[in-house]
Length: 337
Image (cartoon, rainbow, N blue to C red; front, side, top):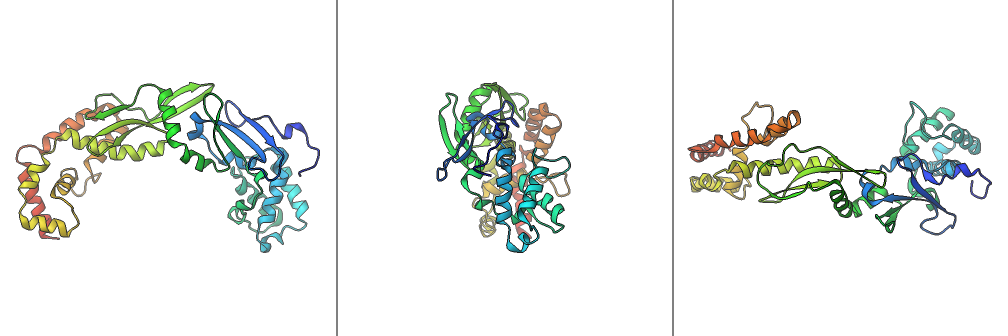
């Protein structure tokens, strides 16, 4: 607890769970926003930081952290933890060295598991009120730039990642090399890696290439998470297909009758061209995928260098008499609407 004599090893100088270790500093000034532990996080690896391990704090604060969480429990659960001091001591001993093998790794889940074992009553991690923790029992993250200057600080790592997303993306893209491109109109850059890496000050910097749909164009950008890259490329591959296929969209739309255009409007399609795009890139019912760009994505996952062949080959299926064939298909669809 605060005010007690503790071993210096209980307050390490660096966060060793990360490689290389991240510097730690301590403030013991109640009322200040940075009271407690502050960890310095380089801006270029902010996108890789997981907040979960920091929920354990350091050994020197773990007993106090457990006590605060026990105090936050509803009274109906606290009554099963009497005497509270003894349950807190037992849980501290069990969790002294961090996550235990074959037990939860998130701190609240690990504590709930251990208290359930101790008292025989089910205690869920969601029963703890994290917002009730005093500032010194929540880690402060200080994001620093390449010169060591503090860019931003806060207790919520996810909020910091969102706040600094553009800055992180720019720095990561600069460090991983000249991979980004503007105005992409064809697949001329070879296989697109799922991740690109560089080493900066001992830290492995990771970026995730993605194709970005920019309306009538496609951009190749390095994003900060694999999930963001996957979401963006889902649309970017489709847009690149539309560009490369050279679909005669206006020719298709011109052969539609006024009745067909009115029916389109009633169905919520703003323009005939939009529906032509949809039909031209929709597979027949019963196919493996609903859309042609999904076929391309699946092929890319299997063999990335098939992309150009697929794009060029698909283009032949919408030339010639296809405008009138699409119009006939529209007529059938609308007749049954």
